[in-house]
Image: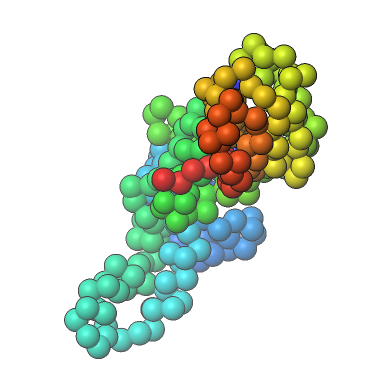
Length: 233
């Protein structure tokens, strides 16, 4: 079962800027292209940073504040923001080094990076750090729009039958709004747990209800496993 990778969902038409792009130029491009961030590239199209709307809004929010802000702690916390507020080019405003992914990275890895680094999109780069695309939160979440019947067919054919050599007729598979309910009696507790674990990673699965009848009742708590696909820890 092939995992969904970044190249399966990324956008290849990317609006990027050079390090010397002016604030006015970037503001106009944000409005024209309806994007929330720009990868910043050098002359070789290698990604060297990212400028976001938040970076640019710093100028509007803090640019007119006096340098002598009250309180040492407040001043230390805002030192970086004040420096950005004085910036006039992409090089001044960009976050660097950039957080990036490759086309071969899994969607899970992209989701974890977005969650942990609190970013809305990630530049996609090749082995030489050249810009080849961009992936957004919406791109990552798009895999959950997969039809229920398609998910059910993959679970029955590619997971239960092909991966575990089990007759799909012996296990019940119900999919409703991406939530999978598994029923029936597996040939062993271990096989049952392995099937549940594998189903969690089928593209489009939102959660798994384990309703399998194990040999020992205490082997399963019949739990509702929410957000099966993107563990964040």
